[in-house]
Image (cartoon, rainbow over all chains, first blue to last red; front, side):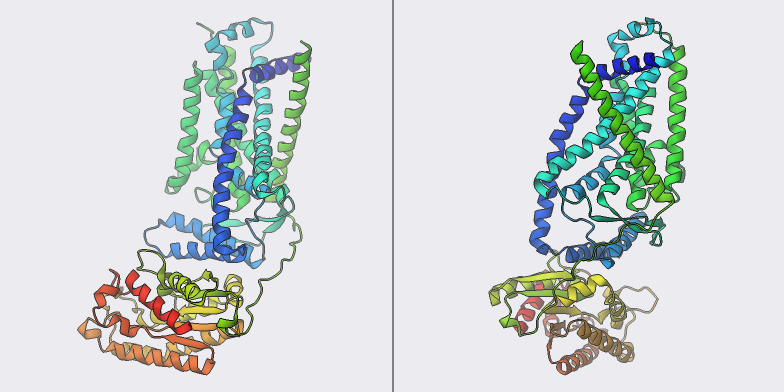
Length: 329
Length: 271
């Protein structure tokens, strides 16, 4: 066990010294202000139009979406999505709660909802893709494997390290998002109520299980779900990193899979069996938000099961290959 | 070596705490999804202020709500302003005070009976109670709606003046109910009803329908007079000569020039 601890320490420090995490933080520090600025412009614009009357702004959103439902040009799938959205917004309005109260926590919540499919996986890949293939391209893998340690222990230590960094990335994203957006929107909003528990079936929203929770708890649950999805991405990236020699190839492979998933979730609702792909299931936060899932019939349990199967398969392949593989130049 | 050990301790503890926190969040999310609790009590927020009584000239600023069908949406206007935005802007200039469109709640294809139901919506109520002026167009879809044969409205469909005549009484009842409900929600707002025009004036078969349109407008005018704080803005005359210049390509809705003329009328009626 002490041996394992040393291995994890070694791996963690290696990633740190390669400045992988510093790159992630740098990306966050550059991009979050960009989004904050964009959101600020939108907020200013609507403040000018609605004079701070959020009810009228919310009703306007409902009316806009209802009007769009009348258009024949909009595909049926999008209409379902809009119908569900309209019912949800109406629920907020009926209970006199502002779903977009302007503060840093609301911004963080919105950012995380959008970041879970692309942005966070991208940052996870910055660390995961390089974990094994990086050792190979630099040749240090020989040194690692000639030590009197079983190979599976080495890979396990890498997996543990990866888990720790995935958690660190997600928490850092939430914290930086809150700190930066707070400068503009104010450091408030942890206690604001949010509704969860909307059950979407087709175009109808069942509100019998809807209940309000404080935004702080929402952000925590959201981060937890994002963490699970990111862990699956990380495990698959580790597998690709074991299988592929170069870091670049491993990164591009995973990135392609994730982008394909993002595109598929937007267009593949008629291709039903796409729901068994891992990359279509990454957006776990939709179940919290209560927006319709990308493909009808998907539930939180379903998505978690699909992701778990992919992760288990990824782990099996990684360990099988890593322990048997010949290391050549 | 010392510094490395400190770094490891810091990193190890931080990342471990993060991991535990996120696992807790994940488990909580599962629990919340599968075993939902009643949740927190929702704090009560104050309702929007209701409009005050008094004539329009004496108020410091004016709130407008727009209700109704595609005409109020502004369908056919390439600039997207419709008559509502233009009239509000012009009114603000003419009266030299801020005029705000609280909400344009109009929906394409809306009928009077549907609007009657929508008035129960909280969003509609919120907007209506705080308004000093209500813009409204409703009834055209009730009257001109083509039964079920799906022929295009642009050609006048199958509608004959006789059919319009038969429908008139029923739609009049709908409007009367709607008007009463609206008045109940806001006893002080000035209701501005934009009168109907005959979009088929240039089609020989449908020109006589102007008579039914006029009957309808007269009826609304009676309602307005009985109400005492309402105006019917006539528009039929705007679409009789050179109709093509003021109708959009669907030959039913006004184009931007048509809407601008309606807006002009609205401002004249209010100021």
